[in-house]
Structure formats: C-alpha cells, structure tokens
Amino acid sequence: MYRDSGGGLQILIVDDQEDIRISLSAFLRSWRYTVVQASNGEEAWEILQTSDISFVISDWSMPVLNGIDLCNRIRAASFDRYIYFILLTANTEKTDMIAGMEAGADDFLGKPFDHNELRVCIRAGERILLLEQRLKHQQKQLVETNAALIQTEKLATLGAIAGSVAHELNSPLGAILNASERIQSTLDNPLEHGFLSAFAGKVGFEEMKEDLELLISAALHCRSVVADLLSSARAPSENETCTLPEVVQGWLRLYRKQLELYGIEYDFSADEPRRLALSYPALSQVLTNVLMNARDALIESTDDKPRQISLHTEADQNHCIITVRDTGPGIAPQMEEQLFNAFATSKEQGKGTGLGLWVSRSLLQKAGGGIVLRNYDGGAEAVMIIPFADAISSPIL
Ligand SMILES: Nc1ncnc2c1ncn2[C@@H]1O[C@H](COP(=O)(O)OP(=O)(O)OP(=O)(O)O)[C@@H](O)[C@H]1O
Ligand SMILES: [Mg+2]
Image (cartoon, rainbow, N blue to C red):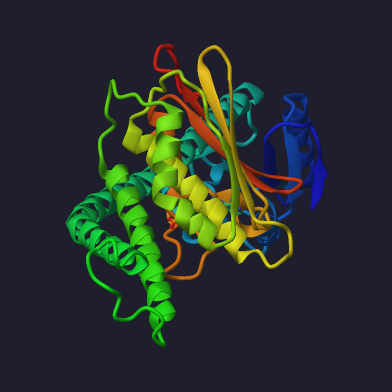
C-alpha cells in the first residue's frame, strides 16, 4: 500500500497500471485529497479491512481480483460505513455498464479520463458520503431520543403507580403512627392517663418501650417514603409560599426525639423571615429528605467523631440559601456521579429507595431553585437555593 497525504478525504486508487495510478494520484493530490494505492482488487480489499476509507476508484480489469468482483465483495460485506465506488473502464459499452451497476458501482469513468469529468465524479461521490454521514448522525439522534422517551414514559408510569399506592398507604400509616404515639404517651405517664401502670418496673417493660420507639421510627420512615412518592406524582402548586422557620419547627416537632435517640446533636439557625416561593409540604419534603440523609450518614458512620447536623441560612436579594452539614463519612465515591438519579442509592435494600434527592431537586427546580450535594472537609453538605416569593426568578440549576 502506498499512501500520500493531501490532508482531505482519503481515496483508494486500485489499478494494476502504475502510470494510471501515478497520474490519478497527481490530480487527486492537487485537489487536496489523500491518496492510498493498491495494484489489484485483493490488495484493495485488505486495505479496506484495516482502514476507514470510504471512497474507491478502481480499474475494471486487473489480475487476482478485478474491479467488478471487488465491488461485489464490498457490497456483500457489512462495513460500518458506506463505500462509494467509481469504476474505471476502457470500454463504456452499455453491457459493461449494466454489469458494473449490478455489482453496485456508484459511477463510471471512461479511460483515458478527462480530469474535469473526474472532478465532477468525485464531488458527486463526496455529496453522497456527506448525506450518508448526516443520515447516520440523525439516525443515532433518533435512537437516543427514542431511548430517552421510553425512559421518561417508564418514569411517568412508575410515578403514577407509585403515587396511587402511596396515597392508599397514607391513611393506615397515619393510624399506625397515631396509635403508637398514644400508647407511648400512656406508657410514659400512666398516672396522667388515669390508671396505675401494671407493667412499670416489670421485666420486659423497658424493652417494650424501645420496641415502640422502633415502631414509630419505622412508621416515620415509611411515611417519608410515601410523602416522596406523593410529591413526585403531584403537579407543582403555584402561588404557595412558606417561611423556613415554620417548616424547620414543624420538622423538629416530628423528628427531635429521633435525633436524640441516635445521639445526634443539632444546631439549626433558621430565622430567615421572608416568605419562600415553595409550599410548606414541598419545603418540608425537601428538608426531610436532606436531613434524613444526614441522619443516615451519621448512623452509618463508624468513626468516633461527634454526630452533628447543622442548618444555617444566607440570603441574597432574591434567594435564600440553606446549607445542611453533617459530620458523617461524606459521599461514597461510586455515588458522586448519580446522586440525583432516580433510584440511585448506596443503602441496603429496604433502607433507601434512592428517590429522596431526585424528588427534592425536582421540587426545587419547579420553584426556580436548585440543590447541590458535596463533600466538605468534615463530612457532606447539601446546599439548597430557593427564590423568595416576592422575587421574580428563573431556574438556576
Ligand atoms: N449527607 C450525605 N452523606 C453521604 N452520602 C449521602 C448524603 N446524602 C445523600 N447521600 C448519598 O446519596 C444517595 C441518594 O440519596 P437519596 O436521598 O436520593 O436516596 P436514599 O437516601 O438512598 O433513599 P431514600 O429514597 O429513602 O431517600 C444516598 O444513598 C447516599 O449514598
Ligand atoms: Mg434519602
């Protein structure tokens, strides 16, 4: 194989006559094509296997493998690209042309060739190859778009199913929680409830109270999963606002005990008085997801660092920025790229659904805000940005 470089499209010249190859190459190089030469069809076939050449100008009659057989072989093979084939012929009789066309040649050039005619032939071939490339690109895009649509549709169906299941689970869960909390309060203060505790001080009493704590915390976990699913299925509500202090206080009322149970210290300074462009349930959902993630990270942590969660706020003219930090082990490297993907979780089966961050980001983005999760030198931090209700804002993340 002989190759000389003009820098442009690569063209393979196949001819057993050296003088023809030389004169063709000279023309092609002067038009800035890169030329590769072969002296028969078999040699050309080898070259096509190991290169990405997609343009062939081949003589008809050659020893070993002639032009028609080379063309036939190319068309029968499954290359990953289209190969444009010009057949050179000393004899342009109609019957020969038909044999060439049947073999799959794209064009014919009579020998001796006229260099203008050669140029026109090559230009036509280039146009076909360009069209072929565009088609391939569009086809690839179509396949990708189709895959994305299928994925979106799957998520939408899943969301609808999950939403209705969550809805059905909500009431019994509420009943379980209420009943458990009532029993807990009775066991804590039997006298207040009008009877002496028959069990107080008996073997197993404390274990029973601990089991009840577990029951409550399991029910709370289920409720947060249900709430995740409900808010992902729920259409965004407009014109609903809330303040951060009311949401944080509401959250603490529900979860303070749980944090204490796990020995987690918390330092929440949430005194931003301006109203946020997010409904109370939506912000409560986002904070629950982020704070529960912090709690889980601290519980799973095996080092002796104190277990702490902090929440503080900053504000610019239009946005409130809430940072939640924990002193846990930080984000696992394998999770970094997929934190916000639906169902991406590092937790054991049954402990995490991998929907918390996905739902939180979608709720915040719908409100024109955003969320990032990253490591800092003492653990992980979630930074949430939420527009103030009185600020006109556009999506930022
Ligand atoms: N504070 C954090 N520290 C370390 N890793 C975190 C933290 N927050 C989130 N992650 C990682 O991000 C993953 C995804 O979190 P996400 O809240 O979306 O799902 P999950 O907590 O696994 O399940 P659930 O749907 O029950 O919330 C977690 O499994 C965890 O690996
Ligand atoms: Mg979570």
